[in-house]
Length: 101
Ligand SMILES: [Zn+2]
Image (cartoon, rainbow, N blue to C red; front, side, top):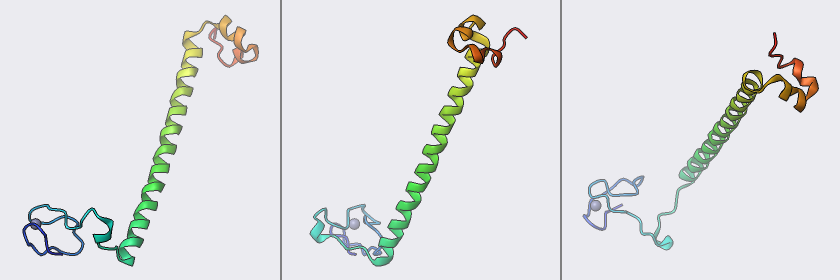
């Protein structure tokens, strides 16, 4: 693909000129170079990969937040709230957070 600005011959894989950085393809969709079948499949694979990784990280972050909140709540009940408050909230749970022992 020849650069329209400086005339440098660029490899087909490039979207911008390697010499001057000019965009090689027009923003007009009619003038765009269509992707080859391999480029399309590579793009599809990259998208699925990105989505899978995104889901994994989202899952890990949500899980981490829940674990963190659980620890905070446990510590609050164990060390901060007085035992009679726990009795007031849930009488059966007072033995779990027994602060007298
Ligand atoms: Zn150029």
